[in-house]
Length: 316
Figure 1 (tube, one colour):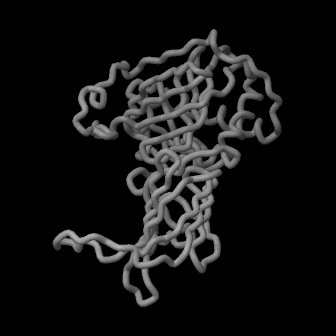
Figure 2: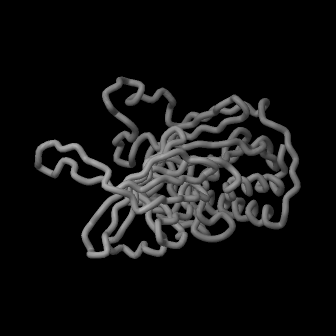
Figure 3: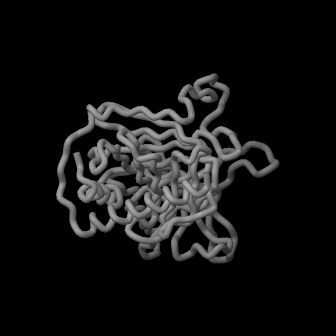
């Protein structure tokens, strides 16, 4: 078991993911220095089974719009492919016409440092920092609302709980920007905007009894991943476990996912909304020394939990 002062050491691996292979988040991306809210260039990234599809929209020197297409494998978190200038295809409202490749300005190279950040090099340009462009979910309480399926994996044993975050508590902790919870105030989450856990979403079950889980996530859209740990005593926790989250319904109740008519598997869920499954006997016993940075992160997490417990009690 991990002492509370040693537990947070495991977050170093989560908060610094550059040593691991991962797939970038699908969706809109852009150059960080060009994110000023004005019309400009950008690109769409789709990732599937180690393959990247990249579409770029921007402008020629004369101001006319243009787009390029590229695809290829992701190798060691790096994507390099030839940009293709495709022309002559079907016009909007017109008859079908086959497009042809008219040429290429060169290669595009992207080095992903995480699922949401990286560096891009266009032909004739220096390397530039890039990030995803969220447009539906803000980094705050409203972006966390909805029904979440949370799964922790201990070895080959998955444990899942379903949580409906449908209450904006209206209060924030010292380092967060707004707490959300379920109706019973027994599960709460908050995006951290400052301190040791800045940029992460922290969630926990309350009361904190044996078997209760705490989560530390990074999320993009309807997906989240990070770590979880389980309380096994008043002063001890399990070793960290890989954790994944999927938002299966919006705050309005509308379902996310495919919903393509394939039947009940996409529209029905068997877990009761407040169920928690845990098996402390299968938790790994680990001891790991903590650095000053680790202790600072753990202290920040404990302070957040204490603040949120007080806020939840007042909001009942």
